[in-house]
Length: 406
Image (tube, rainbow, N blue to C red; front, side):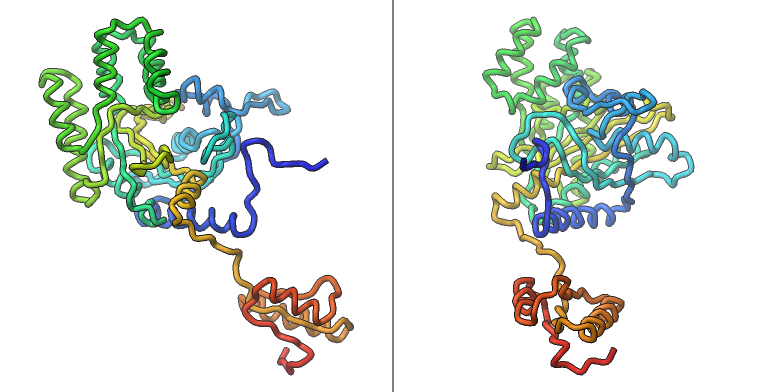
C-alpha cells in the first residue's frame, strides 16, 4: 500500500521547501524592520481559546481531540488567539507597544481549493497596546512592504470598517441576533456568487427596501478619498456611524505620510470571517486576477479581555504563504530556490587509508563552515565523480590525486 499525505496537506522537499522558506524569511525580514519579534506558540490549545469569538464557521473547522486527562483540545486553527492568550499571561512585564510575529502552520477542516489547503502556512504580525491612530497606517505600511519584498508591489489593500458595516445593518432594523449571520453571508458572497447571495439574504426576512440598501452599501468601493466623501454624503453628521468614517479619514492622512495611500482602496462589501474584529479590517488583492485574498487582518480590541486579561487594544495581519507561492507562480515571478549548494565532493579509493583520509579532511572543511559530501555507499571513483556532478557541487576533489594538508 502506498501512503499519501492526508487530504489538504503536502510534502515540501528540496527546492519546494527552500522556495517556501525564502518567501517566508523575506516577509519576516520586513516585520523585523518594523520591530516585530518572533513567538512560537504550541501546536494545540484548549478548545475554548481557539473557539472564542471565532464564529461558528471557523469553530466547525477546528480539529478537536481529548487528551488522556479528558481535556478538550484543538489543533491550532488560527494564530491570533494563541498570541492573545500569551499576552494575557506575559504582557504586563513587556515593553509597550507589544509587537509579535509568528511563522507557523495552522489546520482547518475545510474543502481544499487552489491556494487553500487544510494545512496552512502563514505569518502573522500582531500589535498590542496601541489605540487607533497612526498604528493602523504603520501596520498597513509593514503589510504592504511585505508584498513588495517578495516581488508583488502591485497589490492593492482593500479596507473596510467592521463597526461601520455592522452599524449600518443594525440601523436598517435587522435584529441583533441576525447581524453576525448576515455579516458572515456578506463575507462569503464572492465565494458563493451574487445570485446565491441574493437568494440567501432573503432568508433573513428583512424588508425588501432594507435588502436593497444593504446591496447598494456593499457594492461601494473605489479610491479612498472620493469614496469617503460619498459615504459622508449618505450618512448624516449626527449619525454615530460618523465616528468610524472619521477613523478612515485619519487613516488616509497617515497612509499618505507613509507613501502607501495610492495602494489603498475602500471596499464596503467584505467583512472577514472572524467575529473578533472591532474596527478596521483589510485584505491584499491583485486587481485583474482571481487569486482572491493574499492576506489580511484587522483590529480586535476585545480579544485579550475575553481571555481574562485587561482591556487591551490590538491589531494585526496574517499572510498565507501557500497562496502567495501560487500567485507568484501564476505571474511567472516565482524564483525557485534550490537546496544549499555543496562546496566540495571528496572522491576517494575504497581502502581504509583513503577512507580515513577522506573523513578527516571532510571534518576539517566542515569545521570551517564548508558543505561537504563524501561517498557513503562504497562506490568506485568513477561513480563518485558522476554523483558529484549530479549534485552540482562547486568543486570535486579527488583525494588520490591531491597532496592535502590534514
